[in-house]
Image 1 (tube, helix red, strand yellow):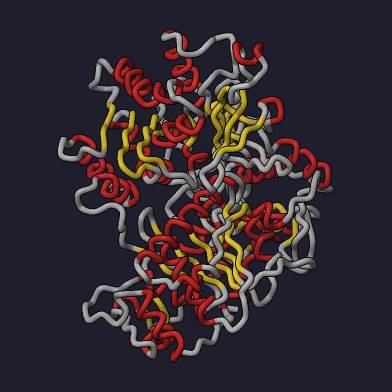
Image 2: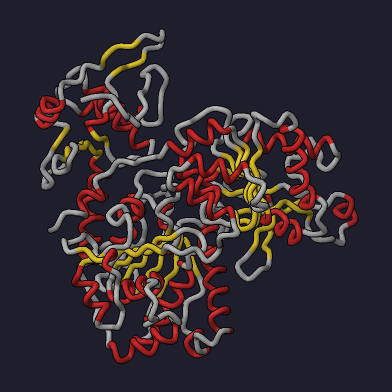
Amino acid sequence: MTSQNTTIVSQDRLPSHPGQALSSVLLRLASDKPNWLTPLIDQLCNAIVQGHSCLELTRLELIERLADGTRQPYGFPALPQLTSQLQSLNLVSDDPKETAPLMLDLTGQAPRLYLYRYWQFELMLIQQIKLSADKDLAVDSSQLLPWLQRLFPTFQAEDNDVDWQLIAALSALLHRFCVISGGPGTGKTTTVIKILALLVALSEQPLKIALAAPTGKAAGRLEESIRQAIVQLGDQNVLPSELIEKLPQKATTLHRLLGVREFSNEFRHGKDNPLQLDLLVVDEGSMVDLALMYRLISALPANCQLILLGDRNQLASVEAGSVLADICSLRPQNCFNRAWAEQLKTLGIELPDRAIADQPLPLSGNIVLLEKSWRFDEKSAIGQLANAVNHAQPERALQLLQSDQWPDIQWLNPETNSQLSLQLDQLLLKHYLPIIEAENAQQALTAFNDFRMLAALRNGNFGVTGLNKRLERLLIARGKIDAANVWYKGRPIIISQNDYALDLYNGDIGICWPEASSENIAEQFQPKMRVYFPLADGSLRQVSPARLPAHQTAWAMTVHKSQGSEFKQCLLVLPESLSPVVSRDLVYTAITRAKKSFQVLVSAKLFTQAIKQQQQRFSGLADKLSKRG
């Protein structure tokens, strides 16, 4: 074993960390306690906290950093001896038929150590995915072909370009399990609408369909996108009105779909009480963690189709696991078994040779990558910048930022801009003063949703907390808000905890605003403050600040919190020094939140380091899915 390329950070045992309590419990269960067991369990628990679903034993941290700054070896035996000694402990099992607090997986290229629950989640999820993926669906081609010709103008085109939206639709139509991944503007929503139209049109019975996303904000955006796509396709006479009436247009959160039980981690719906659905579409799949994905798939009836949508290159879920990225890692580019290619050929669709593999491929036909962005053309630098970051090309990314050719991106470089602090303040006031000066809550929310300031970190001067305080100081200095009043007019807040009674969810954004005029004379001089939240139909609902679940001020928000949202303009503020979370996928996710304009405040050195640093989450999901049986 070596400690080279280690991505799991060594932990001092003097300061506590979130996994320490669990580590203590596990150690109490051990009958034998070799000297290396405590640091091993500490590293496993810390790996879970960092988002890994397991600990790869080839990546153990070998050296402990003590409080006085000195270092000493942890004393781990060599890898073969370590795995052998682990197998002898009462705390550990390598037999899938047994139950133990720790599970040792020796079936992959590298031995992995799991907490039992994550090992079980992963194993059961793999079984469910393989079971669903193996179920092909029969479709009457004589009924299908006219609809394909109507919904996909490029169907049976004579050029060599592949319409991957069409391939994705056929994948979803012919398989019970389908993953569609694509970047911003690649047409995931439009493709899903066409898939739904095909399924509804070809079904002899009414279908029970649900649309869902991990957060309330993502569900709201999915609902809005679905409605816009339906209107557009209806206006183009692609979808007949009688079919539009049958298409679902409401979306919900995954937690609400599964049915939350108060004071419990379990849901009402599961293996023993499955959802009554024929089809489930899940958007923003990259945000779904391992545990939630397992519970979701377990709650689906055997005949239910599942379509996962998302961007495999975005940040992974906050909790442990990176399910969408793991599944998509099986297919770095669109490529299918020859049998699937022949099946498409019977429908008149010819795949290019580069998209056909002679050897067996796992989940062939179940994974489709949308490659063409319809939002960003060659005149847009946002798409080019996102592509350069995604392909780990810092030189190209900096070249784009340095050029005056692109009006839709701007670089605020602290190394060359002596007026940066003043420029940042002016930028924030330009975008945020219209919110304070708006005539009503609706206007304030519209202005707020046009621009968003994103940060990588929560704390620090360039973190969410510091940036929120910076803007509030600017507004206080200009007499726009009262320093003594927490609930000032125009204060944006973001919900951080689901409240199903209030129908408020993690990620929901609201604006604090005076209640509409009252007949009470006292309230006319000092009106009650309410927090206004947008509804899917464009109207607002108001909630008393005292009733709100956990929340924070949201002038700035983390990139993680911005997932599932899009804004006309985005400003990304990165810290002064590199942090483990400042990575390629974080920068890519921030860039792809912007539709019209993207600005970034960062030094060239840190921007380069961030693009070169890719977050990798360790799991056995992709490894096990790639194996037959």
